[in-house]
Image (cartoon, rainbow, N blue to C red; front, side, top):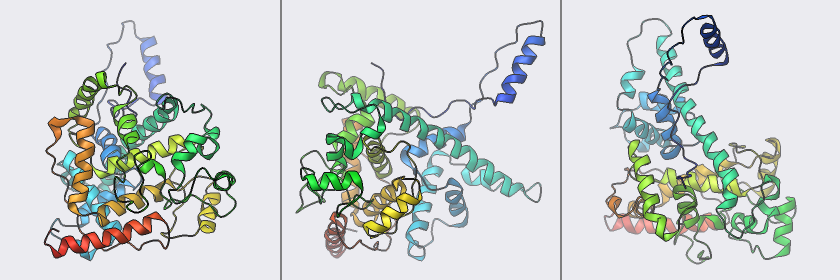
Length: 390
């Protein structure tokens, strides 16, 4: 069976608009000769935009990322910037890795008063088009295929019957601070009423290996969920006798785009896609922005204000920020190394992770597993720095 990754190759060609297709058909009808088939135009920026969805960021506007890269020097002290600005700059460096001429593209000589702005909008638009194409393909693929990935779960085709309305989906999406076997928990999560609520900081069981979450050591195996590895990066055919063949296909597709290792952005992006596929939400959107540490009532109001859309961007950025700011370099490297080996095999064991700028500690939420994890990691970071490890 072909490799069924929801991360398809980015668009190889820019499709013709409806008006251009009509003109093409008209020209063809009027011509007495059979017209030669035109070669599709390949847009390298759209391809990079598709790659960026996988290894960069799912939500931040690419225009903001490009502006940050233009306005900031590589040698600038990161402590002079806030967390968002440092994040944008790290994303620009990812774009620059795959398009080394990006600065030259953005700083072309001005031929007119607005040419610089036009260039920025054009480049960001082409990158966004590639990212949007890949996002839509990923979301559609995982939404329709995930039912066949979980043997015995009987995941319904109808999206509204998933999420907390489905026992196994609900178990994976249930916050780890709650007991899914408690009828009161199920009822509250299903109705959105009562004292139990699942916000973007209420990390769920999906983010740990099944049955391996340890309340006393929540950092252990965080994000090392084999569901993410097997069913997102490798696809459903993960039987032992086929695994080597599947990994070979992953390698060839990834190597075609210069992707030979998995970074934190990819890991968290995969987790978000699985979360959405298991949820009852019909469409995946960024949802409302939820402040760190917001209470259940505030989160519920935000979701209601956005048509019931769960705050996926806040969920995504919260996990990204926790791992990049609160993990030591060794912890980040270990996590990326583990995923890289699981996906690509032993030949990709040697992986030099992207250097992460040290930023100020995030404001921790007041309760929940994320708060405990932040407190634990602060102590780990202090010890690492005292030992000269950071």
